Length: 369
Image (cartoon, rainbow, N blue to C red; front, side, top):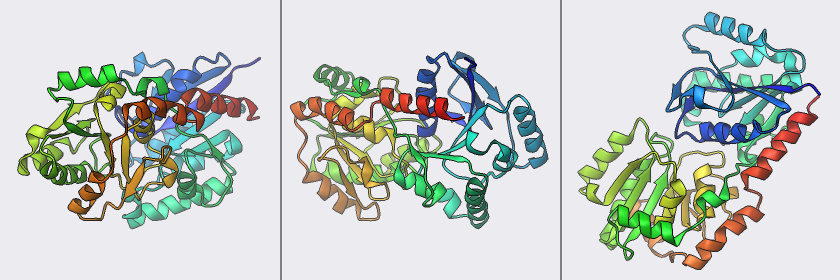
C-alpha cells in the first residue's frame, strides 16, 4: 500500500503557543503510523525549536507578506513536490492570507482547513484584515475544501454554519494528573508552604492571554489573604511589561515568573486555583490540562462554555472590576485532594485523551480519497 503524503501548513512554530503545541503533539504521535508520510511546512518563523530534532520532515519557507510575488513563487515550488493523492492540512486561526487558498484551489477536499480559535482580535479590529478574512471564508466554501475545527465556536469563526469535522484538543492525561508528591516537591522548591494559597496560569505572554489582568486580580486577592502567591508559566513578548506591572503594584515578591516548563503538570499540582482571562480561545489546552489536574478553574466568558469539563470550573466577565472578580474567586472552596485525584477520569471519559483524538485524525486521513 502506498504511503499517504501529508503536508502540514502552519504560519509560525513558536514554543509556548497553543497551535504549535497542537501540531507538535499530534503529529509526533501520527509519525508512529508507518502508512503516513508527514512533512511540516512552516510559512515564516521558528522560535524555541531545532527543527532537525522533530520526528518529521520540515520545510521552512521564510515567507514575507511584503513580497507577495516571491510568496507565490515559493508556494508553487512547494506544490510541485506534490501529486494528486497528496493531502494538505492547513492549521490556522484566521484566513487573512488568501494566497495559499487560491493556489491550492484544485486540491478541493484534500486541502483541509482547521480552525484553532473562536476569534482573532487583530483581525476583527483591522478593516483590511477583516475584508481579507471574509474573502478567505468564501474561498474555503467555493473551493470545497475539507473543514475541521477544535470546537463549535472555532468552526463558526472560519466556516459560519458549514459542515465540519470536530477533532477535539486531547492531552496526555497522566502527565497532568494531580500528585501530592509533586505538590510538596514544587512548593518546597519555590519556598511556598502548604498553608499558602497559590494561584496560577500557563500561557504565552501576549495581548490575548491577558496576563496583566491576572496581576490586577491577584493584587486584590493578596489583599484579602497575604499568604498568597501567583505562578506564571510561559514566555512571550509582553513578559517584561507584566513583570513591571507586578513591580509597580508592590507584589513582585509574591509573583513567580517561571518561564517555559516541560513538566507543567507538576507545577499545576502545586496550585490551588487556575485563572485564564483570555480575550479569545479555540479550546485552550491549558484549560484541559488544569482540569485534568482537578484545579478550580476560572476562565473568561469570551471563551466557549464547552471548556467546562468539571462542575467546579466557572467563568467570569473580564470587563468586571478586579475587586469584584477577586470576591467571586474568594467564595469558591478549594477542591479536595481526593476530588483532584479523580478529575483525570472525568476528563478521560469526556474524550479529551490525545490518543483517541489522534486516532480520529489518522482515520480521517486514511478515508480521504
